[in-house]
Amino acid sequence: MDSKTCAVCNSNKLRSIEYKNDWSELFNDMTILVCDDCGFGRSLPKIDSKSILDFYQNVYRSKNSPHYVDFSKKISNPYFYRGRSISQLLLGYQYLHYKKKYNFLDIGAGLGKSFISAKEIFNDNVNLNAIEEDKEAKKYYRQHFKDVTIGSSISDFNNIMDIILMSHSLEHFDIDDMQDLFKKIHNAMAENGILIIEVPNDDFRDYDFEKNRLKDTPHLSFFSLESLKKMLETLDFELCFIGPAFSLKEDIYSQKNKTLNQPKIILLLRNVLQVLGLHTLLARWKLNLYLKIRKNFGRDDFHKNINFQYNGNRSVLRCVLRKKSLNNSRYEKEK
Image 1 (tube, rainbow, N blue to C red):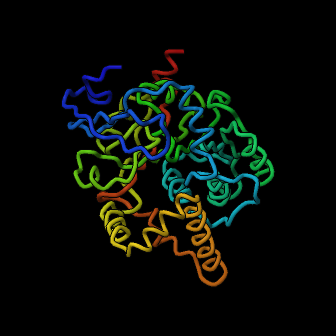
Image 2: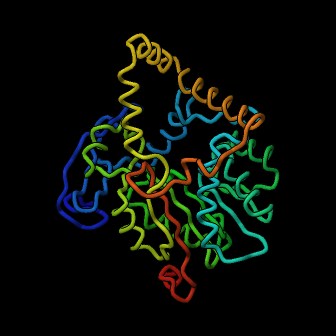
Image 3: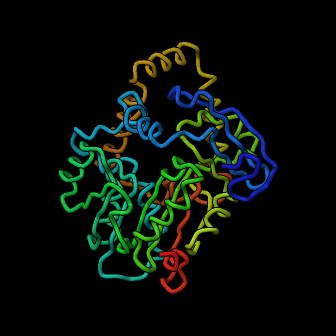
């Protein structure tokens, strides 16, 4: 690991900034090394694989975490956060070669919303696959998606996947591990298969972003549009699409300032709820109720959904990669 040059563009225009940690002591001594040429940021020092795996299993998915998934309950409202997976899969659909049936793999499937979206978009002409080690998650998938195939690693699949989805997963990998990761993904894909990736748009060259961001934990890699494109172009894939999507950063900053300017009693109540682990649960309940009302009494105006909005200074980066033909693949020649 060379901390004197950028891991993406090899520039030496680097600076260290504060790592905003509110999760675990594991990240207390971290900094972010930012490249002022391409905008890529990496967390340092590198955390060993055993420690980071323990964090994801025991802290990131704990009940007080905003990323907690309760796999013991029945499936939640199928309209809950569906806009993201539908917009991602419809984007990728444009670059697919026609098949009577597709193999779909979600790396980090959560509650399986992408499975519902894939079945709708491909008219049930799709085989569902997930990578998961958690016992409760496996039980949940088998109960609610009876035809899902579950693997423990990408290496469990070989040359069969037509669509692979990595939604907000890549930023949890260290940049030093990504060449090996993408080689495994490439090996899992069928010829002309596509890989859909979405990551946060974390460009630290943007002063407003650096100042207004809330937290960095537990991300290990931070991509600007330029640095993500540069990294992807070094891989053995065809880059079909890349661009910013979802909400405008300016709207997020405005909402943050609005929240900070609320009456002190409201801020105090919010802090108490967060300490008790209830704030996230109430927010989810409120949104779920709203979506149920829309489902039963209104309509889903997906043409207005923020997940379908692109370009501008937006909060996520979305891209589609296609596996190169076997004859032109560097990975195939290395086998």
